[in-house]
Image (cartoon, rainbow, N blue to C red; front, top):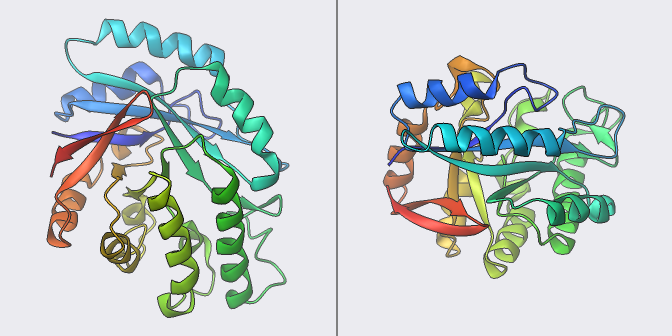
Length: 261
């Protein structure tokens, strides 16, 4: 089974890719299931907030139109921070989401991508704070399925790869918590187009998650345009098998479904 569980279309502010084109592209690539995860970020000057009402209407229309060709799932990507929990809970309560990514695009209401958060801090400092804030958010959030691109900071770290040994204790605490709460993590294949040295999250994190008993894992391209749909997902499936994973997950009504790799 081929599934892509992190996809953006023109309902996300950083994409102009039509949903219908995205679906047809996935079908042409032989995918069995895809999940749209449009952006909702809150609390910063560059928030990405999709129009959920219009997004849901389009999803329902295309779900019926393409039901014989591919399974479509209704998801969301919450770019969250702990102090905005109420805002995200309200959105979650209004729509029948199948799946929800919990992402960390901002820390202390400052963006990562433009170095707003990192500026004025050492590499050790901003990495430490990033995972501290992630733990705080996971401790109070419940309405999510998996952590998206857990070590996203690597994408925007101007000093290069930060040694895993310095963040291992923080990462382990987060992983233990999400396992206890029945949540999971994703492998995000955007690492290839960003030319990172490792997978996202890193193989160190993926191995640690498995050693701790983690089982819920999804794979997503984080696509925003045609050539990114489904990118490197077959390769990641093989990498997960090589690490000892036996399953990957899809979701229905926020419940994980385990599929053989």
